[in-house]
Image (cartoon, rainbow, N blue to C red; front, side):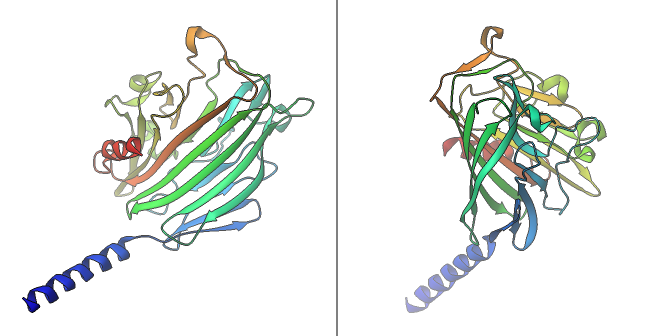
Length: 299
């Protein structure tokens, strides 16, 4: 009996040690106008909020291979900044495309609330402003970064938008949370874009409502990608997706407004939106994206 208890205790200690060893350490450090995040001392991403930028954004967003799964602005699409949140045609302003005089989402404060543990939590308060106009929106962002495994990194992005006056958003494809994949992982380079229903590519996913979208491709002898999920508690859920085979994807209500009318929100109204980003090795099936969404939806 005594030997049996010793054996049980020994196995329990091995189990605890294994769980402890498997848990990653996530760390963040603020350096000027960005916050750098590492997972087990390996660089994962920077959250950038410089005064000369259109809006705060994440870049790079490194996959398990150590290379970024997202890309930055280029000559053809200078308004695609990796992984970001913004909107065009807001009370006549543009908080998405280049030109700060047209509108800008400015960071007011950036606080690291949790650090050096199983997760990093960042709180970021922003104001939407443009010269000669009253600011229409203030937003508060909560960013939680974890690493469920060595092959799966996770960003939870929650944003609460407060209307500072009556807000009208005209029909636009440039709206809300968006990702731009690295060209090497895009459909145009042989990659895959797939939604929760199994539809693929721009032709199969454009304008289709779906809880999540995953984009992945081959890099050397490895496959990796990035999925974006929208939480069921979000306004307008499930949103249709604006997708492009060159690697852009975004769940947005603003391009398909009800009755083809503008989206109108009253002063004092708040909208809370939650998204989960999974940066993963393998395909949507090997990364078990569908199962991961079920866990997210149950939160």
